[in-house]
Length: 192
Figure (cartoon, helix red, strand yellow):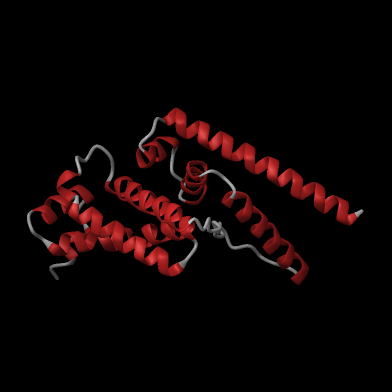
């Protein structure tokens, strides 16, 4: 039961053990964060295979740079920063602005097929609206809405000030609101 001894360790303790040569300690860190890293990568690139590749690359880079980690922030914040940077670089390289799929955070009871279709249509419109945002605004919205990060945590991930994060979020919400106003106006015209 050697693995079970790692379950109660903090991330910082696991990092120290990994730096001392314990592969199982780093494996525990991977197990703790692999789903979160994958979902973050997927929300940025919206492709399963690319998200898997980016997740693996994020952990590989984290492992390679573990000695440089100063413990000024939490391990998951540092790991998210690596993942976000890889995701943004991937988007820039591919020039294929993938849609960001906002995953259901709560189970929605769908009472009718029409309601389900309307919900799906709205979700697609929101995805397209988020996709149209500039990269920093897009990532800020993903981290804030989908991952529940605070402004301070986002500033650590994006390596910018809290004020910049708040401004990015404010502008993103304003841009999304403007886009949605156009959609609502169009829907009202159709139903008249």
